[in-house]
Image (cartoon, rainbow, N blue to C red; front, top):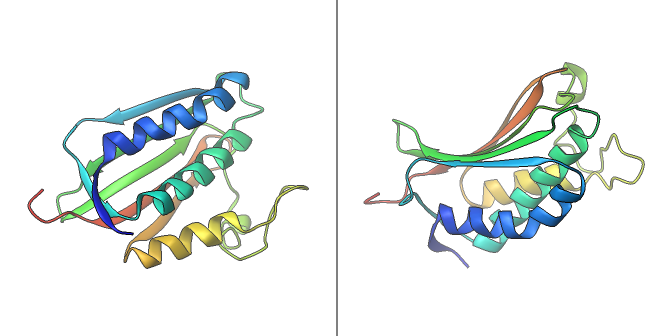
Length: 153
């Protein structure tokens, strides 16, 4: 169900959806979008599923942090790509775990199914995009979703 959408609308949806959970856990959600006209050509419900998953993972990562923050941002790169980024100031991911996080059924949580990130990767592949992760243990993690820029944007 691919269509052209404004990133700001998707971010507003995410905010509305996630705010009660984040408020309950005293986590700040910062939304950073410099270009209100930024668009994606995606299946919105699938990409929202990816974002929900990444934000929920981030809430886990920041639960021991004094001033927990999650950033949701979107921008165009100089090379015809649009990036949506979910970053946190949480515990970070060690190098050894980094190799396993996209493996189906791998989870560090007792209650985790281990489906989340492998599903995110599948959804990004469906969109001919990629998912990248940068993490510094003790400082935080950033997941970046890379899409082809919408023509005419």
